[in-house]
Image (cartoon, rainbow, N blue to C red; front, side, top):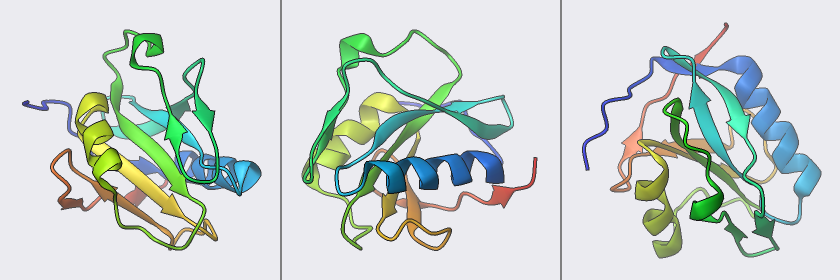
Length: 128
């Protein structure tokens, strides 16, 4: 699948929101979608019907909004492990090019971004 929506980075405020959401749902996983303003990832969308527990988070694809500004997904790992699982890889391709995993303890050093194929993506944090 080709992904034409590329961004220059993630807004620091958006990253901080993600980190706080992950902390507030701990020890359960957090999951959401990433929205771009065309240049940066600036927002996180919560999908109705999303469920989570200590081992997984599930977003219902049929509840995803029809929104061309969605460029990826974010979810947390309640343990300090930024590696993706097979289930993560399956989810990555369905939601866009940028797929962020945030690991406990959810600081600005505890996240990584991956492409749909699982390659690490450099996603700079930008003051917006």
